[in-house]
Image (tube, rainbow, N blue to C red; front, side, top):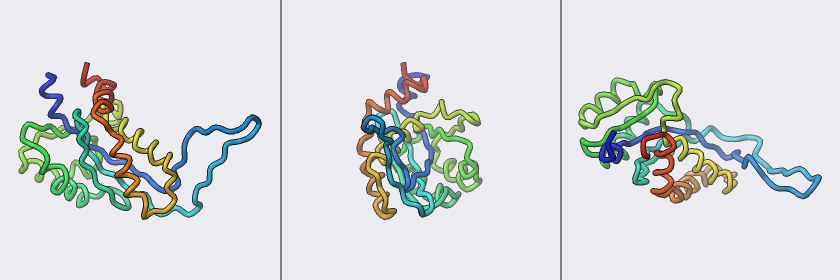
Length: 176
């Protein structure tokens, strides 16, 4: 794949976040256990649906619950497709809503090329690395009120830089 083609790749994925996310590592005094508090009753998961490009552009949306065909199609219509040209190539996993007839019709009508990754291959999707950075940011923020989660997610997306994206694409062997 040429450098020109790589600039047209748009990777797409969704991930769940919630208010009981805590850091995986912490420091404590010698012979003391590191402790963090999390809420006992957590509301339903919040889903973040996003795309990522080599230049660092991310088009995302946030909603409660899981991804449905209707939500995915709405994201494509309102957030992603208006930012793309016919030269772009959308690359996504094999989630059921990505294969829906309505979604395929929408993508075909936009004349954007779309591809599906092989099953069980997150190592080929650089957006998985982006989720890691975004979730680390959310864990650091320690959001414990569900209404504050969308603004924390927006703040997390502001930390994503073009050089991060280049590194993530490189780790997936799309860039040398």
